[in-house]
Length: 109
Image 1: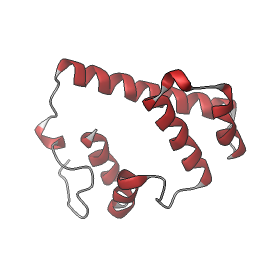
Image 2: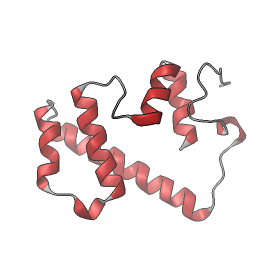
Image 3: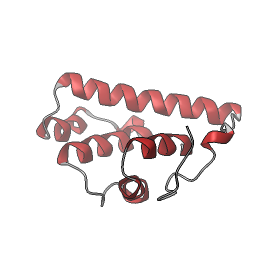
Image 4: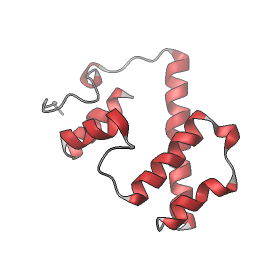
């Protein structure tokens, strides 16, 4: 998962990435982003516990059914690909081998 953080740092503020990676619940995020992350966390950690009512916070935050589908697809894809990599013992490429919250550290690429 570190390589996702490295890519995100290239696109946005390092302090924000650190705040989100440390605890997304206390990070300065919109209600929409909080709803998506709560959904993604539950889908990742306890997928068998998902119920239709888990979609309500995202709808209340303004997501359409298409947006909810995208949130589910993206979460599911990253869960799948991370489990495949972990299950096969895939190691990170040297360019990606850095902590997710290396605040202020410039990366090559």
